[in-house]
Length: 337
Image (tube, rainbow, N blue to C red):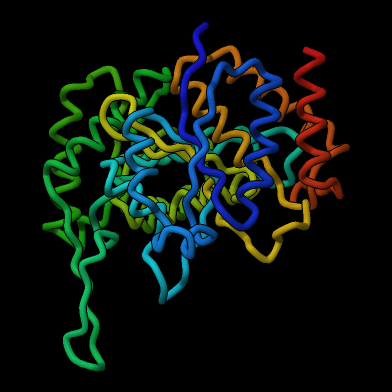
């Protein structure tokens, strides 16, 4: 198999350390990838005057696929999110966040296998906001038929491609009758093109309750940007937390960026204690995406074996292992297969 060239962005904070752990795991699994390293994030601000140099975007466009570590996003001030900028500039309109139970993770839930498909570019996260007066701020919610149709169609196709069973559209159209109403209307219209996919609707607040009470009855869910951000974290919490939550951002064709769902956690910089699972499983998703299914399955099997044994895992999963030690244990598990 020819090696696939992929843009690699280690990120900042804990990013470089967990990325190196993940690269070792993917290499042990037989991934045929040529890593094209690029710099982005808070650490390159002084060097380039921006956390996201244009050369990095050009590199991703050339390679088509990127794999990145977490990058710091300042709160309330500083530069806008690099992650959001990547999605907008590369038109990565669908965020896919799987949440599945791994034996050995401490959680009261079992038999969970959920996927949140989040519209990535519109809604309140379009960032159209301003001060009306010194005491009143306004943010504008934007939902378009085009944006709704392509992410909902993506979700239906995802159900088919991965042999899932059901698609649930999540909305608040009972209150936001025009914006969420348009999203829901589009989903209803498209459902007729997919008679083989079970289709249902849930209001977002009720969906939150349903996911806590009986998450096992749900499968793939598609929703506008804000709800997707919230519900994807909720689903991650059901299966153990953000430390084991992978993520992907996809556009048309093969264009995609894969990254963990959690942040850069700069307070843990250099401590070698953060769970690398989310970063590693984001690599699992990437390998699936580029057609290296056997390597992807070995990555997942190695992670599942080490977490299932519970001997060499990080603090969030109930152990005391270091990041590097857990990664080495996963590499060893794969090498024994």
